Length: 121
Image 1 (cartoon, one colour):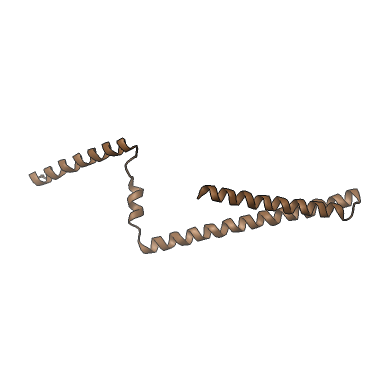
Image 2 (spheres, rainbow, N blue to C red):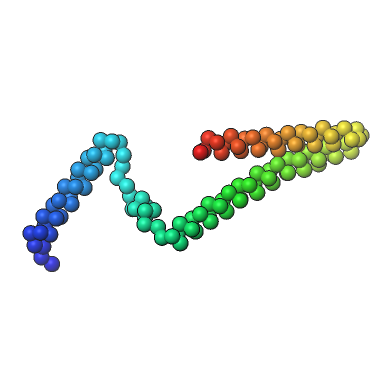
């Protein structure tokens, strides 16, 4: 395929533009955007809706994880308290102490999660 003068002129201008753009981005300390950048600009409404649903499901799974950590800390406290009462014969003090410790551990996990969430925003 033969290139006419308009095509060759256009190709030279394109190469000069790419060179100038890469020089400017290097000067600013940035890299040229890749294909992924342009792909995000060209998303269809359906793709955007699916991405929103995926993000919301991610939030639901985070909330389920946090609640299960909270309740599992309390359940472990109950189990340790019951076992200590059976072994030491200190009914109901072991159960009371370990349930409170389990509750405190669950609250501590919640606080850690909220602090991490604030840092990531």
